[in-house]
Image (tube, rainbow, N blue to C red):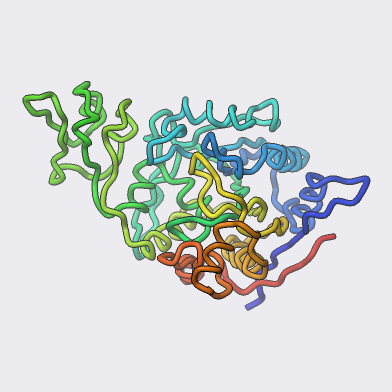
Length: 372
């Protein structure tokens, strides 16, 4: 089998050009113009960054991708789905405010922003999959309504999956609230009774009559009736409801790969990863630590598996940034060259790529082609 092609540019910009222009040159060299964009709705999946975090991708990068596909006739929009955890991107209104706060708007990016799974994370399209772990993936509707899918990924560390790259941006990022529940947790939501105000909004969002109230007007969930859809989490204005029982991290990685396949199968897709500001943890954190390695560059491919493998390999060839979390851990344990395992000893990112290759999402073998 022919190796997948992954295209790479470093972060040098000689006088007379700039990094955004270099990004356009890269994605054109990688073949993005081979996709028929003419009049096609094009979802560009990105992470807008949890406010307080400064490692997320600047909107300037997104604008260059938007401008490029517009020039090819596309009707692009930037998109993400609501979060499962409590934060500033839990519903579409706060999510849009967070995006605007971090510089993302129709004016700065040249296209509209759509929160794909709607106001409360319940606008989902069920995609039949018949995977080993996922039989029906629950994906944000606006993403599945698009004709073409592009992922624009910030490659960084992740405390549960080792790193967050293309597969995580697609699989976890495109899941509705119920989809994120399925990937992240093997259990069902629980109530923090100290936080519960007895407003009963959760009961209006439960289709299975699983929520009841005691004499003190505090809610509880009957797990025999609950199906784990997570709608009550999005409905609670007081953050009194949270998921429980983490899935094993290897299972999380495998489910994420299957969700990514559900998103991209059957339609044109293209993937871009920027290995810059490589923070130890996800952009979902409302903070970021110093980068663990120097900036590496820009990568693009039609194969998200090869892309993630190439980015991970490139990161592991770098030396740790002095004074970073990675530098501290290497000094403590004398660990080897797998930087992401050093940061998260309980993680195994290779499982994600092994399973992705097994189910046909892509392949790990790649040819790296440098674009000057």
